[in-house]
Image 1 (cartoon, helix red, strand yellow):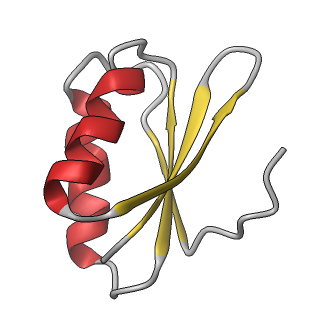
Image 2: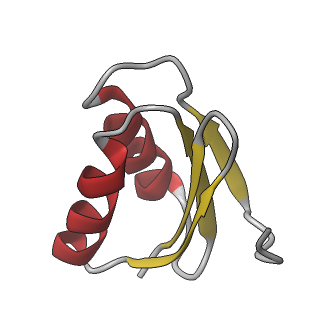
Amino acid sequence: MTDIEPDDTVDARGAACPGPLMDLIGAIRSAESGEVVRLLSDSDGSLTDVPEWAEEAGNELLAVEELDDHNAFYVEKA
């Protein structure tokens, strides 16, 4: 478990790729610089999509939590 406190959480569990990433991008666009958005996703594609997008977009992937039935991605807006 991480001790990162997100400013916003996007629950994209049950959505097929690229849905979770699109939901994350929307949340990051409306976030302020320095805010952390947590994405909850049960799509295996998110394990590669989110880190690649965060790097390309210049945001920081702070942590990935592997939970029982989904993953939680913590992204800080640049």
